[in-house]
Length: 111
Length: 115
Image (tube, rainbow over all chains, first blue to last red):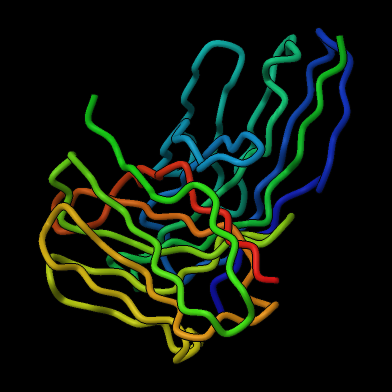
């Protein structure tokens, strides 16, 4: 069964304290892995797509990486405005239109 | 700006009183989705449309129905809401790239409260 697990569930960082969020996945075949940011009471906002092991994408303080079993979202020198829930979603080759979401990591960055 | 708009943002209803949530998009995407998201949980797919082709998830309760009268609009009807249906309902759209759905663009969500 296709599955996505994110860890940790919650993370508190001091401003400037770098860390990584993990997304482990089990799928029959990976079409793409997506990272989204969700602010409280809002819909998720797209961050990155990764398609193959070894691929990396960067945007400001965020960097996403992908292996055959997991993806990491690295946050370098975070700021309070980076506080949000970060969701990982996987699209498998067995489902053209379907995405399997993880439960997310709630990140709180303290000033 | 092209976007996905959901209405209403907040809906309060009584137990058993029907509710309709709407979603409109200006992105001209083929695929539209309805997700249910409860607190601290992953979004759960209820339905999706590829153009007018409707796809119901096997575990979506019969209480939930959907309509897509045209490319731009999609509706979620909850016929008899129960307390367990209180949640955020997210509409999302996706283009097709090479025959595959791609990046999801979400609306801001409709928060449903059932009294």
